[in-house]
Image (cartoon, rainbow, N blue to C red; front, side):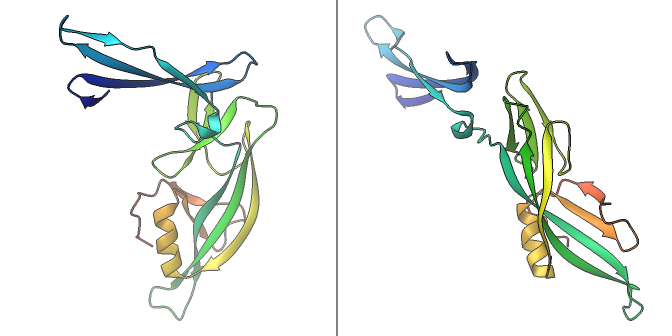
Length: 185
């Protein structure tokens, strides 16, 4: 609720609703209240109701997203003082909601990771950048980057992994959510 002045207040609320066509929409309701100085009470004006598509809702739902993964690869290096060298890679993957799931969307959280949001069942769960029951994951590209680029990427992605030299190609270790100001690369 926000106050325009001491005699006017605006309250806003929102919820998921099913419209006449059977689609799930975000319903945003705005109500203006005016204070009656004679009756000493708040009077409600007629509320303004606006239906918004899931893509334009405050959750910014989407059916597909391209995600940056920061991968740290350790390799043995006998010339190095530590015996290992670290190489940095930016792997881009495309997350797509499978067509069977009409009311399922992807949203990006405050922790910079993606979530699978089922609007019909009112459930949300965090997903990893792998194939799952509802989401398909496809590799778009992978390139080697510098340490400075890795530090910048670490601040904008919630996916930081490590991979060891002898591990199979698809094996990633150390799954964790990177803090917003991650620069520990």
